[in-house]
Amino acid sequence: MKAEAKRDRRPRTADEQIAEDAKLLSSQLSAMRTRLFPPTASKSLRSFTSGEAAKLIGVSDGYLRQLSISGEGPQPEIGAGGRRSYTLADIAALRQHLAGQHEPGSAKARTYLKWRDEAAGEHLQVIAVTNFKGGSGKTTTAAHLAQHLALKGYRTLALDLDPQASFSALLGYQPELDLTGNDTLYGAIRYDENRVPMSAVIRPTYFHGLDLVPGNLELQEFEHTTPRQLAEGAGDGTPFFARVQEAIASVAENYDVVVLDCPPQLGFLTLGALCAATSVVVTVHPQMLDVASMSQFLFMTSDLLSVVREAGGTLNFDFLRYLVTRYEPHDGPQAQIAGFLRAQFGDRVLTHPMVKSTAISDAGLTKQTLYEVARENFSRLTYDRAMEALTAVNGEIEALVIEAWGRSA
Picture 1 (cartoon, one colour):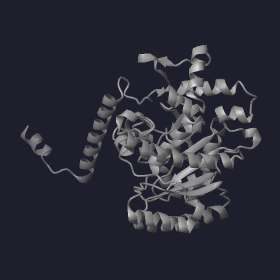
Picture 2 (tube, rainbow, N blue to C red; picture 1 turned 90 degrees about the vertical axis):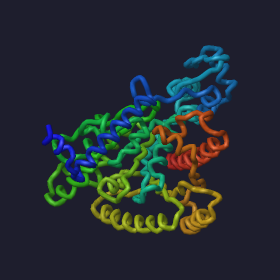
Picture 3 (tube, helix red, strand yellow; picture 1 turned 45 degrees about the horizontal axis):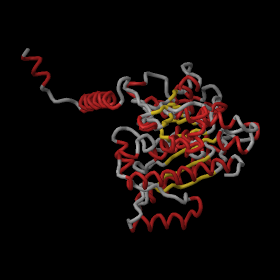
Picture 4 (tube, rainbow, N blue to C red; picture 1 turned 90 degrees about the horizontal axis):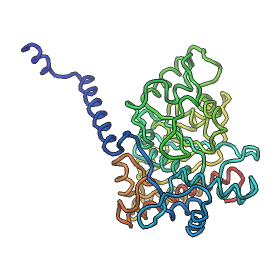
């Protein structure tokens, strides 16, 4: 017993201490999830008021009430005081019902059902959200954009390429608990016989119309195996930079938009994502060190993509935009740097910045986004200010998608 106690008191090695901390943190996160999202310990999306549902669909609240009274379409849940509420699935069904009252493919039908028309040449829109500087708001931007598009009725796929998997956590998955092996994008782009179809790694989320390819540390294997494949010249004939594109193409018919959360470094995964992308959003925090870092990021990206192009990769972006994030309008130096960026890049800088908000930070404490929490959980001014900024940014990106399809806004 004394010898055993003595062994327990010995100094831990660095790897033992880190492993112990990882297990402790994981167990606490699991316990937190169980407390926040009982009884199945999985996330669920709140219902929407009649006014919120009407705004998302694009009709008046009075018209939605008439539909309910006449028994048309999915019926809302009636709560205390006769208040009507709709799930996101109900809202999607209402869109289908209203679109069905008009000529298929007509402009009127598309105001309700916004799915892309492949026969009309509307290609899958793949938006890569990227920057290799940590703290630029990349993952928060990607998560809110994906959820915005799903709320608006687009069939959306979220693709987590970051081994840290924060994107997956925001969308309801805890990587070390919910994933086993070969169930990230790596499973669909690996070089050996264990490769699986892209459809096998796609998972539904609690957000109707939003699916997810989750991430975890397994993704790092692609960074390790790719150099070996390049050296040996083996593999299945698909070069590393085309593998993400090929995987996405195999499920393209099921989606309108794919949102990629890229790793915070310029590795093989990020290059694959940029080659798969039809559009790119670069997040930048308006601080001089972040802008200087972005300069190096752009130089490196340009050099590497030119090599990929010479090797046969296709790089045709519908749009490239810079998004100012974590912006504080009353911060003089930030305003100067935002102005500097606009002077350099013109309309390639999105008109609307994403403001820094305690509402988004507070929602993140429970691994939620602003779209998931109700207005009454915050002061109205704080919530409305953050939601206004989110709607403006995501609406601007949505308009670029519609323009890329050749539709009028």
